[in-house]
Length: 277
Image 1 (tube, rainbow, N blue to C red):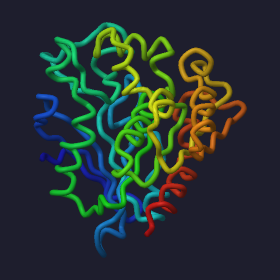
Image 2 (image 1 turned 90 degrees about the horizontal axis):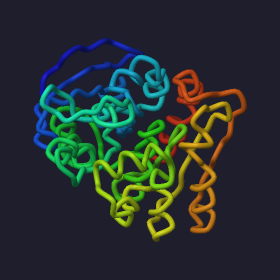
Image 3 (image 1 turned 90 degrees about the vertical axis):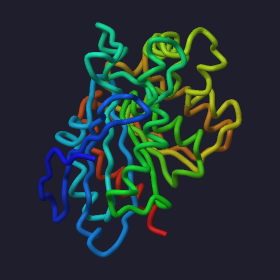
């Protein structure tokens, strides 16, 4: 692992790091905030998954999470959204290819060689973090925004024993039913819609997957709400399955980091409550 940069923040350390990933076959960059409480022993860890076009830097620079993370003693990990590099397959569109990995392992060529973000987030990156940071990953949770909200919800449902809590800002809750997901899934996975369902939070709940509960914040002025996000689908599925879901709708808020930063402290407090014991 290489240290790219570090800064003191709220008594802790914000760092940016990189390493050669076997999962993606590329150099991967990620950010980690370590709170001041880590001086006294391992801390709980919260992973944040970013949305389309983003890198680790978007939430690090705009998410305003460090004050709350320092208050609650949380390590916050911010991976990239995809593999990157000149030899990595890409697309001219913003919603496919580099910056748009959708937190799954691609099955179709040429994407399958590098686009293995589920394996990266769930297996390789946690191993690296355990080696280099004072974290207690028996107390772990996950959250994210938009495409990253999709990733957080699906990974929590697929690996419920790995996470104590899951939340999301403006998540793509049913990608198999919206244009962003249909485009990505057909490209990365092929045309088998049964396979799509393994990466769709609403379909996973409808198919029997369970998790302890979710917190979702959604802006009602979000330009993507009606066509791409459709939170009502997930709300209905969770209600039918008996899964606790707090879905908060906020008039006037859009899809941006102005929205995310407004409710970031709420989310980290919610995670901290579930990670204390």
